[in-house]
Image 1 (cartoon, rainbow, N blue to C red):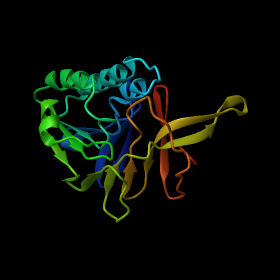
Image 2 (cartoon, rainbow, N blue to C red):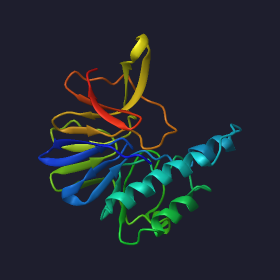
Image 3 (cartoon, rainbow, N blue to C red):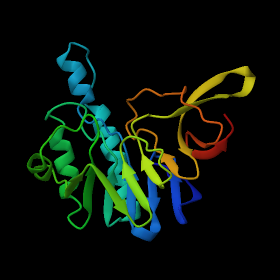
Length: 216
């Protein structure tokens, strides 16, 4: 796994935006990501659409390597850890969390997260919150527009940019305003919302090994 970073300042904090669709927050020793949607492939298979289990395995392999690289004290998942109910891919999550007994895995409730704390703890999730306040930053699965610095997910933001030879590409991105940071979906098996474009935002697109600022 190749890793690159782009340093930004948000709410007076240094944040490293990575090409792996996750943010590292050095001051709090926290790795932050959103929208893993574990079990989405299993959900599709259950409904007759054949998809390999390697979809979630690849996502969790990337997460494993990020934890190995940054050795965070906490991994904050900003919602939609699971795509549907408990499924066969839960075992993959449990295998991951047991590898890092000194790292707290914290889940912010997303619209797909319908599990009890007891279930989540059985999978290695340390804590489960509707929202979380940590230092100057609030974590909420859905974006909040209340003037308080917030990191959120849910939207799966993307941006359409022109490539060489007049081709266009739709790329996952981070969306940053003065008080809002919207994370790209961590899972590679998700769609992109390229419609929610704001003139007041700065966009950091992910393309291969790069994270770079782009204009909408």
